[in-house]
Length: 85
Image (tube, rainbow, N blue to C red; front, side, top):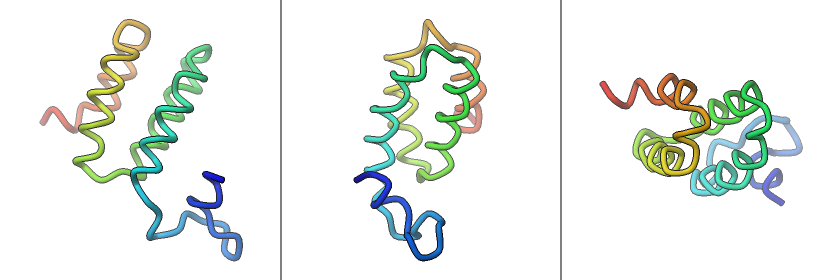
């Protein structure tokens, strides 16, 4: 179902008007499931961030820090360094 929100079948790319709140829900669903792999966690986090607006990235940062601060501090710092500036 989520894929049908994010992708158009005809052209195979992310639809321009997709609901970015869906991306936040996707992040909250997928990131806890990939904590077994640092590489995969980094990839999924960057994917989510690439589809979000700046204010949504701030919300994601807050959520990630509460959930993964101890597990991936270096990845979170790297991913969210642009927001600190």
